[in-house]
Amino acid sequence: MANEKNLIPQNKRTKSEQRRIASEGGKASAEARRERRALRDTMNILLSSPITDTKQFNLAVKMGFDMDDLDKSVLVVIALYKRAIAGDVQAIKELRSIIGEETGDSGQLEALIRGLKG
View (cartoon, rainbow, N blue to C red):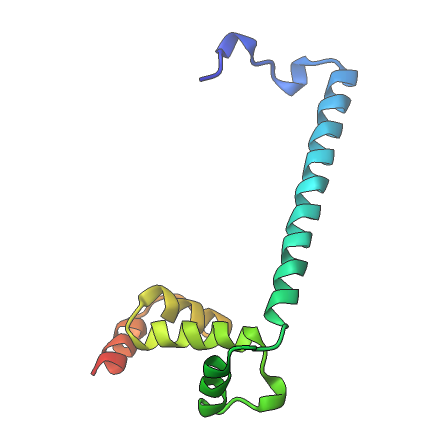
């Protein structure tokens, strides 16, 4: 836990200290953005790569996906769909979010789950 006596509010610091602290914060923020962008780019590369497993490829084709459009992002959607069909509430909410349905629960979620199970 921080020692309260060591904490100095920004407005009690000199202008040069405030500038230095703000500069350090800006640099840290920029680095975090670069890391998130690199992670997002890497994930996009992985998701857009072709399906190499024959069983997974055949499953996607059986589910009606066009062979020319198959990549690993299709497998992610299929996995999410399977979890939703099994009644996983988080998966259902995520699917609803992806397709743009309102995620506010007004009793429709329970009805959807009952429909999936029954």
